[in-house]
Length: 200
Image (cartoon, rainbow, N blue to C red; front, side, top):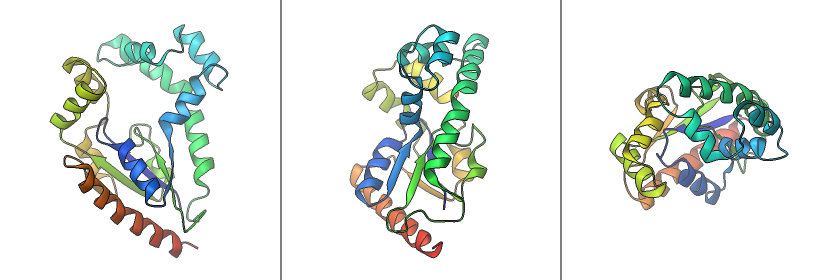
C-alpha cells in the first residue's frame, strides 16, 4: 500500500517523520531525494547547474521563491527538472499500489508538495500535518533564520494548508507540544500497521 505524508512548510513534517520511525514506520523524505539528485554527481546536477549556474541550495531557493514572474518561472523550471526524477524514486521505494511491502513496518513517503505536484492519485492513503500560519512563520523565523517576508513568500508558494487538510485521509494539527504530536503519531502508526496487515 502506498502511503504519503504531506503538509505545509514548517508544520512539523520532519519531526513527525522522526516520530513515525521511532514508532516502527519506515519513511523516505522527498527533500532528501531532491538533495541527492541536485548534489554534485547526482542525476539532476548537470541539468540544474546548466539552467541556474549553481547547485547551492540557498542560492537556488533565493532564485525560485517569490511571487514575481522571474521567481515563478525559475521555480517551474527547477520543478520540471526534479519532479519526474523524485516521483520515480519515491514510487519505486513505496512499491505497488494495494500491496503492503512490509506489514510490520509500513513505508511512508514524505512529500511536501504532494498535491501541488499532482501526485496524490499515486497513493492509497494520505496523511497531512498542519499548523496555523502564525506558527509556521514563527518557526521559520526562529529555526531557519528567515525574515518575516521570506517566510510569508515560502508559505504563499504552496497550497494553503486548509486545502491540504480537506484532501487528506488523516490530519494531525501540530500547534502544540512535541509530546502531543508523539501521541498523535502513535495513533497514526497503529492505524497504518493495522491497515497494512489487511492488505497482505
